Amino acid sequence: MNSADTGGRLLVRSLIGQGVDTIFGIPGVQLDEAADALYSAADRVRFLCARNEQATTYMADGYARSTGRPGVAMVVPGPGVLNALSGLATAYATNSRVLLLAGQIDSRLIGKGTGALHEIPDQTGMLRRLTKWTGTARTAAEIPDLVARAFAELHGGRPRPVALELPPDVLAATADVPIPSVVAGSPVVPDQAEVERVAALLAGARRPLILVGGGVLAASSSTGASTALVDLAEALEAPVVVSENGRGAIDARHRLAFDALALRAFREDADLVLGVGTRFLTTFGTPLDVGGARIALVNAEPADLTGPRTPAATVHGDAGLSLAALAAAVGRPAREDRTEEFTTVRDWLARSLADIGPQREYLAAIRDALPDDGVFVSEFTQVGYAASMCFPTYHPHGYIGPGYQGTLGYGFATALGVKAADPDRAVISVSGDGGFSWTMQELSTARRFDLGLVTVVFNDGHYGNVRRIQKNRYGARYFASDLTNPDYQALAGAFGVGFDRAWNPRALRGVLREAVAANEPILVEVPVGEFPSPWHLIHEGLPQPVPVPPGAHLLSEQDRP
Image (cartoon, rainbow, N blue to C red):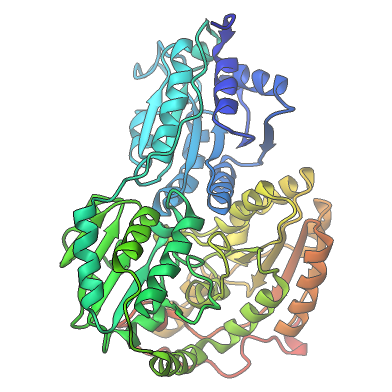
C-alpha cells in the first residue's frame, strides 16, 4: 500500500502510470487539487495551458491522431465542458483516443439544481452522448481504477473518446490505494471462419477493389495495419481507394494507391469491393455506389457491418488484425496484371481533378515544402476541401482532417496538439480566414510553448462556401458571409509570432520551405480570390459548378491591400 494521497495526486499518479506525458487544459477552482498535483509532477507531465477550452480537446485530438497514443484534455465543469464539446465531437467522428478530464461541482450537489458555480443540468448525460464511456469519481479511492477503466475503453474495441468527471471534494479527499499497472490493448480479434469466407470471395474475384477508411489508421497498430493492407492489396493486384479519414493508410506513391474519386471509375468493372474500417456510407447516409459489385466488410464496430449496407460477408475485428489474417488466408495467387487499367484510371483522375487546378497548385507547393514524415492538418477551407480528396500522404499519421463532423475552426488548434506531440516533426496547418478566427488566440499558446507550427491562412474575406451558394443559388443576395479580418501581420506580431505573406503558389512554396527549416511559430497569410467549387467531386450527384474565370483565385496588383 502507498501512503494516503489526495484524489488529485492519485489522478496524476494514475495518468503517469498509463503513460501520459502531456495534458492540454485550463485550470480552474474545481480542479485546484489536480493542478497542485500536476505542479509537483511537472518533471513527468507537461501541462500546456490553452486560451479557450475549445482548443484543449482539439489539441488532444491532434496529439492522439498523430501518435496513436491517447491525448488528454482537462477543463472545468459547465462552461468549460461546453466549450470542449466541439473537439470531443470531432474526436468521436474520427475514432480518436481522447480522454477528457472534466471538472464537476461538489459531489453532494450533483443533480440538485442548487446553482453551484458552473453547474449545468446533466453534464454527465451530455458527455455520455459524445463519448464511448463516461465515469464519475465519487470517492478518491475510485480514481485509480476509473483512470484504468478509461484507458481500457480507449484501447479496446472501436477507439473513441472517453471522459472522467472529477468533483472538487473528491480531488481534495484522501485515500490509500494502489495504482493499477498499464492497461494493455484489447483489440477485437476476428473470427477465423469469417476471415475464411471473405478470403474466399477475394480469391474468386477477378477485379477486386479495396476501400479503406479511418478504422485502418485507428487500428491497434496503425503501422501494422498499413503493412497488412499493402500485403493483401499486392497479393490480389487490387487497387486501394482511400477515404479522407483513411489518407495515409497506404503510401500515396504506391502503384496501388488511389484517391477516393477513383471509386467512380473502378466500380465500372469491379466485381468485389472490400471495405475496411469504413462506414461505407455517403455523407448523406446512403450506401456507397459500387455498381454491380458485391461487397465484403471489415470493421471493429458491429453497427457498420449491417443495414443499410448489404454485404455478402463480413469480418468483425480490428482492421490490422483482420487484414493480416486475410492476407495470410489469401496467400499469393496468380493474378492478372492491371497496370493498363490503373493508367487509364489515373488519366481519368487527372482530367477530373483539373476542375480544381488552382487549389491543387497550392497543395503541390505545400507537399513540396513538407518533409515526407511531416503532418498536414487540413481544415474546412477551399484548399482544405481539395486536400481531402487528393493531398498525397505518405504515412499513417501524415494527414489529419475533421471527418464527417466537419468542424469549422478545428484545424489550427488541432495542429498545435500535433506539434506538441513531436516538436521536431514538421507540421503545416491550413485554415481559411473564417475558420482561423475560432481559435486565433491560440497563437499565444504556440509562442508560450515554442511550438514551431507553420500556420497558413487563406484569406478571401468571406465564408467562402456560404458566399458561393448565395452567389450561384440565391442570385448573389449575400447575407452574413463577408468578414472583417485583422491585420494578420500585426496579429502575429502582437503574440510574438513570425509572419510572412505569399501571393501565389510559387511564393508559398519558398515561404514554407524556410518556415519548416526554422521550426519556429509562424503565421503565413495567403490573400486569395475566388476558387472553383470542389463539391461535385466530393459529393457525387451534385451538378457541375458555375465556372470561375481563370486566375480568379489570384489577386491582381490593384486588388492587393
